[in-house]
Image (cartoon, rainbow, N blue to C red):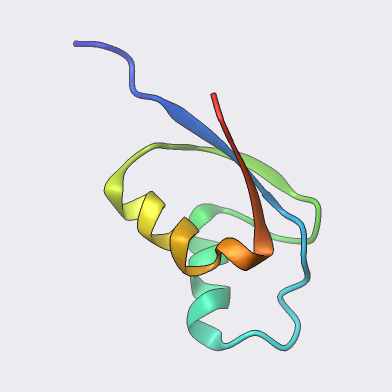
Length: 62
C-alpha cells in the first residue's frame, strides 16, 4: 500500500469574528493560532474542512 499524501495547512487569518462552525473546522485540523502550520493527511474529511474555511488558510501539497 502506498503512503498517503499529506497537506501542509497554515492559518493565515485570525479566527476572531468567524462563525462557530468555521472555528470548529480549524480546531479539527489542529490549527490553534494565526500562522500555525500543521500537516494533515489528504482525506475527504480533511479536504471538506479545508474547503469550508479556505478563505482563512494557505495549503501546500506535500
